[in-house]
Length: 213
Image (cartoon, rainbow, N blue to C red; front, side, top):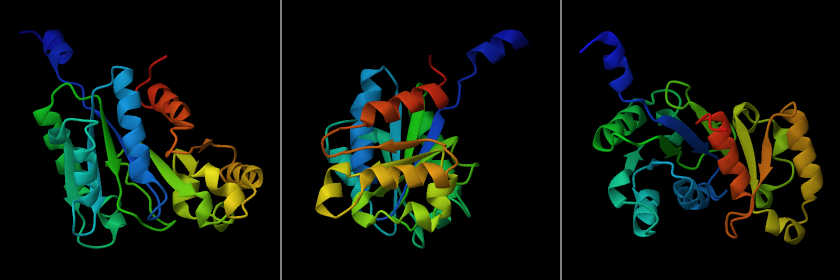
């Protein structure tokens, strides 16, 4: 076999997309919406969840019926959740590598972080692209706090938009302030409970991660 053939037949590594954000912001709900939307576009996916000392989020996704349970792996951080996605992402890298070995055709691995604060960020050794999820119930001052998570992520997602009128949040202002602190880098609005805004997230993943037209 010549070198050209070897290169052509070498498996292409799956893209890895991180999903971070505070507890209760809707990270798992986003994953549950992304799975069928990505599959409907013919994208071969797998999922990794992170938590402190449980596999609760992984079990929730496995029970959902949305994806083969074997394609869902759980990482237990045993410490601050950001430790295994930023300081030493070895456990997550190993989990992603194992999924690629079991499912050679996988194109995209979603890596959900355990719930953390606004300082949570993903190591570029682990992910190619990462999303940070906040929600309107957390307060419209979140963008103004300029946490590293909302500022540095590739895409900021403001979730639970339906709750804005019930918690006294001016959604338009919150969105505008988020764009300002992020220097007009992407900010998307979602209501994961109803599936609103998910198509825009998927379109960005297709374009900026998988490089599909």
